[in-house]
Image 1 (cartoon, rainbow, N blue to C red):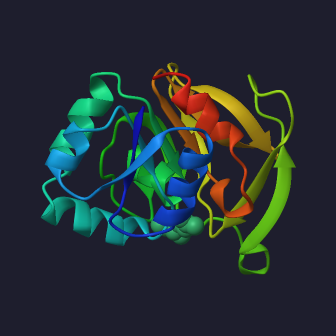
Image 2 (tube, helix red, strand yellow):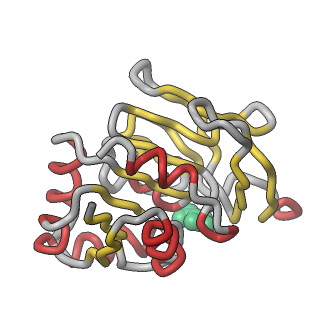
Length: 185
Ligand code: GLN
């Protein structure tokens, strides 16, 4: 299976390594033509405002939205969650396909980044989660399932073919969320 990683900014190589470990062929996606060649897409963390600028100038916004609506499995992590969300506090929506409201950089300065094990529905063992200037999910629409929470906040969301995590699984070699999304392909 050809697994794309949106390669505009952020931790692209780590995601590609996880996908390769799971037996998929990682493809860096920078253009609409690259996107056409992949069966699933991972949107890495990074800086959502930068991802937005680069995605617009690469003419990728419409094509990503189209594929998302057509059912392509997508995993968005951290900034990847933000760019999928329909409503963004402290920012602007980009793809806007996930019926959720997220607030950027919502954890206080002292807890800017932290690690935790989170129980994810549908995945057997706790998933190791690295939160780095993570968004907080404020609200989700009726078609969105909350697969995991951390201290009362939803941290993994699923809406059909879309999965979004507020944290980085790839930075600690955590593979099970990627595996879950590849399983939808
Ligand atoms: N703070 C970043 C943003 O708002 C997200 C951080 C991350 O992806 N680790 O886009």
